[in-house]
Length: 190
Image 1 (tube, one colour):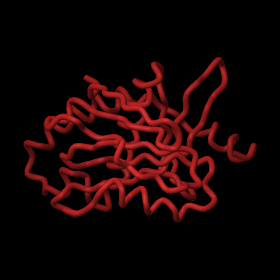
Image 2 (spheres, rainbow, N blue to C red):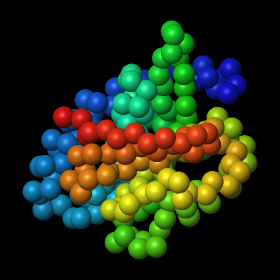
Image 3 (cartoon, helix red, strand yellow):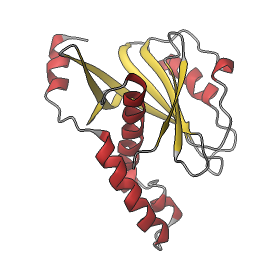
Image 4 (tube, one colour):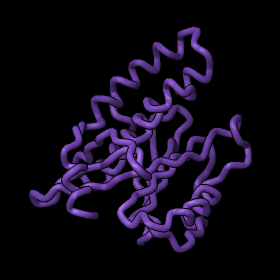
């Protein structure tokens, strides 16, 4: 990552995803009881798209934090080829990861969508060596990370995350698929 890009990313406002996710969970209960459309409840309108991406980014950062045992902060910033920036500290040094979100949509939106299709489509990235891609598995399906075939990719890291319980209380994070992938289970924060 260039020094100029690093400086620009360091100036972003990073936040802990935990309080945001806790507040969203409380709001979810109110929204579920409301008379909003299903699209609005699922944050699938143009006006709510940024909130949907923020929620997914917060879930990814929270899961990464659970995996590495420290807080992974999140900054909203849609620029070039990423949706947000993740940041964490190691021995006093700030690490930054621009993250592009992808989604395997629920079956009611596309019954044939798969993680493999999403991964195969990543070959279009030809100049993204510092980009992390996080695929949100947004459907009730068994995900077997050992069956995923990863083509040569010009990105920094590849992760998959999604709910592993029907009530979305338990979550899974798998990756980095460009190294030796491992899975991590975590609970939605309360």
